[in-house]
Length: 110
Image (cartoon, one colour):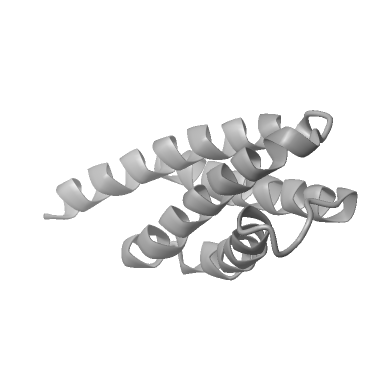
């Protein structure tokens, strides 16, 4: 059972690192009004997945950041808030934090 759980964790880390790297690239692009809702949807869905899966696999420390980002980008995708430069920069910092945390876990397991 332990080996199976470690494989699941490894898959989560690999997949999430890929998704976060993709988000980082999207958020680093020059903001365009037309693409903001699509970016917001992508960020929301990624964060929603992390919020649901991370605590089950022992990555509780990712939940506060992903929950905050999920809430903000939910408002953006619903048109209740704009994707400002400040939000974009803070989101990049959040993504960088999560990437760093997952990379550290990955290195300690390897």
